[in-house]
Length: 128
Image (cartoon, rainbow, N blue to C red; front, side, top):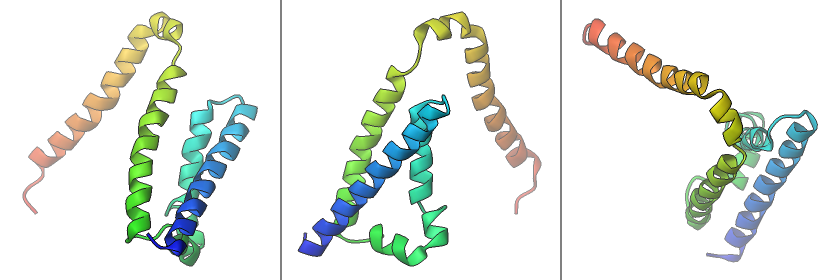
């Protein structure tokens, strides 16, 4: 990894952490979970917003190839592991016990309905 790669990697980490913290605090001020703001920060820094509004800046800050990409991908995988852990810590077990049936029903409906619709579409439509 060259000097330039280390600088880009540090800027990537700094931009991601700043976006997550700022958006998380905004969501807390709006009485929403910080996780929602952190996800929003990722969307803002990703190809959806930053890549569409400033494609050259996005390509420079988040290059698609090279040593920086390998380091960023490794860091993102570890970060997602911790992110899911923290999101799980914010789940209130008392709320789940109180609303268990509706939570299970909603979860199953959110899985079974899209899978069923997709399977039905594939089986009913002729080959393309």
